[in-house]
Image (cartoon, rainbow, N blue to C red; front, top):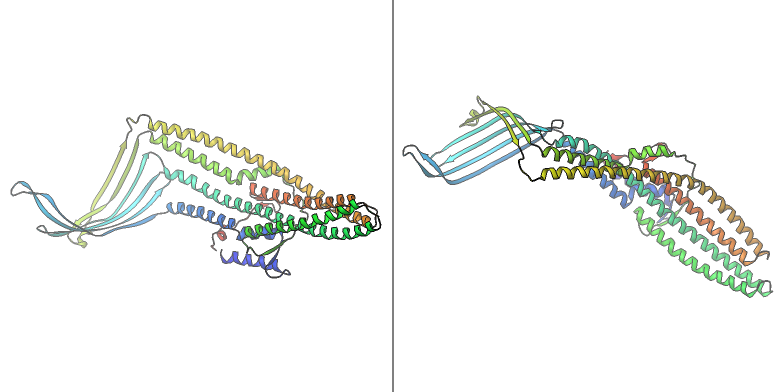
Length: 495
């Protein structure tokens, strides 16, 4: 984690701990999402996946620039017996040979993407010293040699890389945004799991307190024969059930708290209290507009398009390799041989090379044809899979938007239902206390109030899950009307 992310994490923590005490955080949904996108293990994994794709792109760009290499053989010693011709005796004889050699070569290369060849500039120097009967030194130099080599009829790997690699990098960037939106979506689930557990715990405490109060009232009314023994037993059962429900709620809130803390990358002992978001503002998302953004930005669709392009590359490769291949290597330069270093670079002689190589397959028993047919079938499969992925994505977008629009309406009705249930329970409780409502009516009203409270939280959760899923599918922020921004340089830790 770099300094900027550490500062953000500290700021979020400090803001959340305010008025809460050490080791305790009060988190809104927005705080939880920002903290997850900054400090969670999933966010860290996503940043590393993006960094891997980024450096792969940088490697591709670097391969398009001139490259320089230096090859050195500073010392090489030979001692062997070889055949030599003796002109005086007119016979071949074996003679002992000792030789020391050294060489150096400097090469600059530049790939030519459009043509598919390589332009090169070379400079070489070799030194040789003989020992034994034939002693002497020799220098061989190539001060400069300019050349070009390529397949005249063949597969052009450079041209296909130039088409595929930019698409791969764009896919990597969109995958990063998509994965971070997935983190946001998962954070919503953890956040509302704790919110629901906290609500159930609060309701359980209120229920226990109310059950205890009602039992006291019931015992007094039973003593004057105002209620039956069955009603009194029911009140006692309600208190026992309330005690059990409170203990279960305590276990669930601890489990949900630990799950959220772990996901956010916080200490497992951190006490977290979540604050429910208010009623969300209405957002109108048009299906056609969302589909346009999804088609442009979906990493899954881009991945399928990349697969199709790679399959087209394989078809081209197998097709041209099934025919004859003609390659060219041409160069022009200078060279010289002398006994001293200085003379090796004096009055260099012209050195020319033109080479045409032809390779013609004669009999391969259908191997090349088979490879071509396989590649062509793979292309058909890739094109069908790409179309299926696009149709599946479009269906997912349409269903999610319709679900989102329904969730917006349900949040409002759930809030209204909760308000009505709260008021109905308060009035029923007062009527029970003054003896104008029976225990069954009170229990039913209380159950409705608890159910309405849970339904409201669930409706909020479903709304925000749908909201972040739409963002994930389209990589577009419909609330602000802009693409989801991402500082990729900050992601890599560079300024």
